[in-house]
Amino acid sequence: MYFKLNELEKVVNTKVYDEIHKQEIERTIIFRENPIFMSRARIEPSREERKIETDFAYPIKVKEEECFFCHPNEKCSKFRHENLSPIYFLNESVVFSNLYPIDEIMGVVVYDYKRHVVSPLELNSSHWRDGLLLVKKVFESSGKKYVYNHLNFGPKSAASIEHFHGQFICSNYESILTSRVRENARKLEVSPRLALKSWIEALDEKGLILKRDENTSTYLFVEWAPVFGKSELVITSTYHSNLGEMEDLEIQKVAEFLELGSKLFFTHVSNQFTIINVASFKSDEFCNQFRIVARAPLEQGMKSWEGFLELSGESVPNILPEALAQKLKNELR
Ligand SMILES: [Zn+2]
Image 1 (tube, helix red, strand yellow):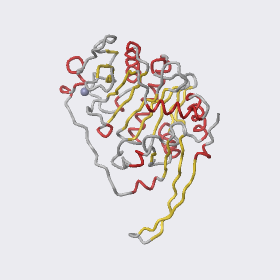
Image 2 (cartoon, helix red, strand yellow):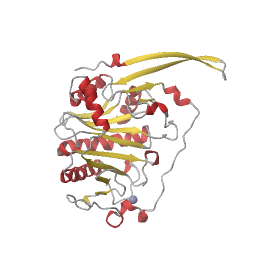
Image 3 (spheres, rainbow, N blue to C red):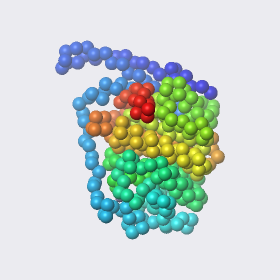
Image 4 (tube, protein in one colour):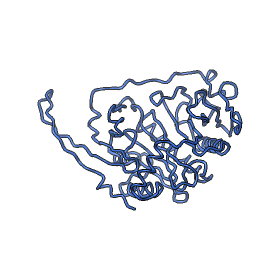
């Protein structure tokens, strides 16, 4: 199949009279449909000039000696599940149970517990790789059908502890998002995997791919029609449906792209973010995706929330994705 992005885009022009400056203003809004997620982006970057400002929440600072995640054996919750060990270590990484699980198995992954790490700039790809490997290990032991490895960073992304960490859920419940992607692909009469691969090909023509590895078919790209936030970077390995079936080479590559993507995002897009993992069961025709979504102002410049539009399933990007891709590519040179 082949996505024609030009057919998924409409330009809407409108005029308003600005009573304060006594002038007529023309506004141009670019509508972009995302058929895989059945979402819409309304791109009008000058909307960011609105004077409303969101409060900037600062993380609760804790000293290293008081931080839970610096002392996982002594201070962190343990799994109490017949198939699982209480806690898992690999090099500087550790996983253990969330104290407030929202499923039968919900864990925390700390990529480097040996240092009090509070930013993605302090992590390297080995930390990301070891974290992914540990989550994979727990998933394999869990006997569950699905694994989702998400991450909240910063108080506006609901991270309650500043020490940089991810979360994961091993579940027999499919995420609503996964079901939605599958249903949308069915309407397009292709598998979810083929839909996303075709989407990536279309985005490639627009210059939105920041990094690729042909060997493992892994990509880092800027989303053309952001689904969840104002700007999105996506890391996906298109060979496999979830972390549990990814091979070491793929995990290594995804880890490298997670390191790069999170650092670029933190430095140039939004210094608080969510990574949402969209994945499916083993041997499904799906692409395991990690979508980095903006949550908060970079230097308090970005307006975080768009209220009812977000709840309508629409996003209001602060920058044209092609412009963001160009900016990030310049940084990579
Ligand atoms: Zn710590």
